[in-house]
Amino acid sequence: MFDMFRKKRGNWKDDILSGLTVSLALVPEAIAFALIAGLSPLVGLYAAFFVGLITAAFGGRPGMISGATGALAVVMVSLVKAGEVRGGEGAGLEYLLATVVLMGLLQVGAGALKLGKLIRLVPHPVMMGFVNGLAIVIFLSQLDMFRVREDGTTGDWLQGPAMMTMVALTALTMAIIILLPKLTRAVPASLVAILAVTGIVAFGLNTQVVGDLGSVKGGLPMFHLPTIPLNWDTFAFIFPFALVLAAIGLIESLMTLQLIDVMTETRGKGNRECVAQGAANIVTGFFGGMGGCAMIGQSLINIKSGGRGRTSGIVAALALLCFILFGSPFIDKIPIAALTGVMFMVVIGTFEWATFRTFGKVPKSDLLVIGIVTGVTVMVDLAAAVLVGVIVSALVFAWKSSQHVHIKTVSNDGNERVYALSGLLYFGSVTDFSQHFRPAKDPDSVVVDFLDARVCDMSGLEAINTLSERYRKVGKTLHVRHLSRDCRQMLIRAGALVDVEVREDDPAYLVAQIGHVAAKERGHLPDDNDDLPGDVLPTRT
Image 1 (cartoon, rainbow, N blue to C red):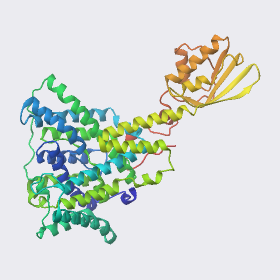
Image 2: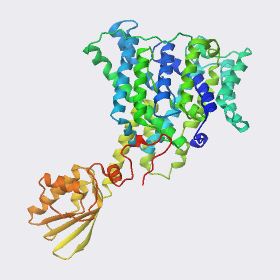
Image 3: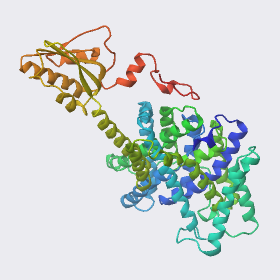
Image 4: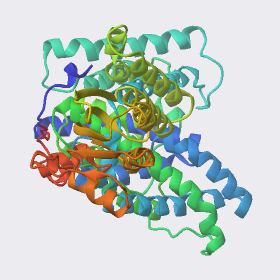
């Protein structure tokens, strides 16, 4: 999937041209998402401008495009309706703007607490399911464009010549995007396709255009304080919505950031992106915008068109503002079919086609995770899909790890028996660990060697303590060796009656922080990967 994006660095020309291409693709999306939430098209366009500009200039992922998104709009529908009930006509927008500001504050707090690092917990099968589900969601959203009536509303499928024209122009757009790079890469193929199809329609061909969804004409966004009661009751009403919106926005943005990292073989900064996105939403909430987050479809268009630097996102945002102020007569005439064709190419580039080649080659549990995440993404939303995927992956890992605790007898001279333990001792494996020992049948002295094992949590330590009690009750002594200093100290503090041998080759790790902390102690990882240069991937030994 990613081979078509392998160009790592762009230049000013690439960034400017790709930014212009993206700005055209932002218009129908911003309008459509605003209409989904029951808002004026300008509310979506202002959000796309502010969020896109601020995250492009200060965010942690150059080349990533942000704006109003469908994942947030779906939640905003309920908020706007509930706001109308509370405050009457027009109050829904006011409550939404206040919620967007609070959402931004929560996102800034998440970045300040460096919670962006949590994206490292997302396994690769979850990522594959995420992009597959997202591709399907984008595809399904574009099908509605084949149902747009002349008055801009969405009804039944287009019929007869209207449908044939829509399909033909969409196919022509896709053909230009596929074939033009074989001739020249001097200009983005998506931009050429949009201009070419617009030119054809300008000669009198009847088809739906952007203006049918709602005009982009408007003035400069003005500062506006939400006119709602500022009291505890209002806070209690908007906080749950703000929390959900903040979580969805951060998860979608960090997943998109990680995806672009893989495509460009560079590294973004998750915590910086959290802060920038939060600041952007605070600003847009005070200027009449509906808030937003990273847009994977437009980000892929930007990357595919050669946009790699911050200039591309800044140009896209500024061009969008120019469309609002001056260019609406021209933008309103862009055929919906042209933009639909561009998004269909994004779908093809987003879907992880290698998924089909993994059947029979990867564990069935990984395929299950991919399927679950894809399904939840389509049926619910992206944030829920990622959370479910991480939980299922963790449960699968815990189950598999619990079955890989091995104990064998390495010596038995009649007076002392030595057991060698290998694997991870944690809450999922303590039962299996305990069942291996028979204190009544063992000699008076028993040694358990943890050289090839790791104690992962307090459940593991408690299992050692409980085992020592079992031996003590039958008048025998349990000795353990090759425990880390941290484990030894915790056993002593817990009052465990177990003889712990101290050796020079004892391992060094901390309970519940084995992999990452141990790697830091050995100097293999920096203290904070966000401090790495933005164009260098971290290496692990």
